[in-house]
Length: 227
Image (cartoon, rainbow, N blue to C red):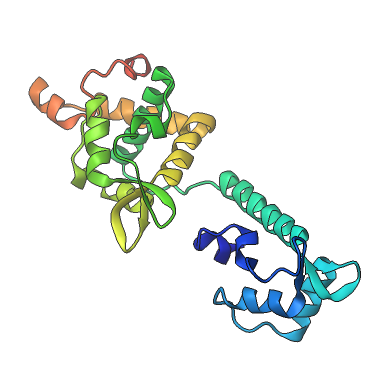
């Protein structure tokens, strides 16, 4: 399932041109096609296990295509559900990073907009993932009142980055997961609120210094959370 997903294939497409009819595939052709994905040569026991599930009407010489497609779809759905239930580890994030996430989630809720809508002008696709450039991320949140420099949230960039080869490319899916935690998890939400309150009540030399240090410039979406 992972190999098919990584190649952006539909399960049935893998066997195009080798089906005996619309429903059946020779078992030998089936395993040849599977191994063409780059999977190491399957052991005979692996063949037997797969055929117990996919063999057509007790005939080990054929695989039923519909059964294979259904199994792949079931795996894909289970993977998506598992991914959606996983928590993104935010322990260790700097206070500023937490405040950025907290205030961003508050803005999305107040304006009734989702992440895709907020960053729609900058979203791209890389390696089958929806992403946004780190610089565009900074510019977009600045436009809604969350003022921060790139160097101040390096830890957040690392948390959201697509991979080591794309360090300044942020995965939208991970950002959505993190923001959902601030929305649904009471403890995380309270922690974000606390970090914001602490920052806003720090002692500053002048009001100008306070304005320079605070991320939020009198942003109406969070003033209700500041005592």
